[in-house]
Length: 270
Figure 1 (cartoon, rainbow, N blue to C red):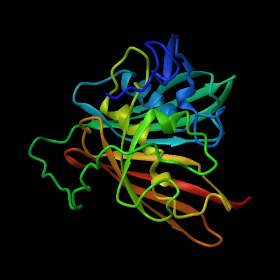
Figure 2: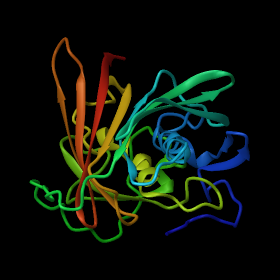
Figure 3: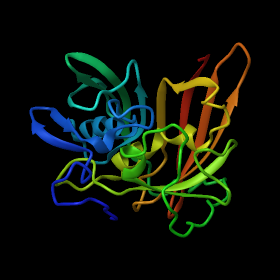
């Protein structure tokens, strides 16, 4: 994995340090593009996904869908994770997670963990393959954004003519430069969750400089386990007057289509 950090234990080497007891120290690498004090939703989504995976795992089961709710910004600082089983059955179970900071919930998660499909299930992938992985690109700009956190901790390779400041549907290959938790290997689910919240940023069709545009949730649904470090987001946005926005995207890896991402967008006057 590519790593641009300055030393073996610098703040840019990982997103979180495990403090034990469900507590984690978030680093400057988690900071989102709108403020160095607030985390991008990708890393905390993945931290909750990590906890959901580790909660009473069952052989032959996989997490197929995770929905993250974002009631308030996640501060860069110490956070705490808690997970519980809502309902457990013979073939499916519903899990629930909560991320809190300073004693207040800042992110919720609900996930379905289901029995893996039989081996003779047809492989149905109706979408065309993703564009080829572009050659390495310099760090993309984002007008008025904080680039030294999450944006720099990820490697971005946009399609021809694409970028954060280009309005319209888009596609980008993305991977982490740093691990989620210091000293640990990432999992397919956590890697996908780290990327998923960037869907609407790849599809900047609503001018977020003129209007307040912010997502209230992220849903990631995976029909198989992702492979490799690289993900391709192919995203577009729908919006309606007197309505709201909806960003949706296809998630591909090196083997092709592996899932979908949906985000509800709050659109308001600044």
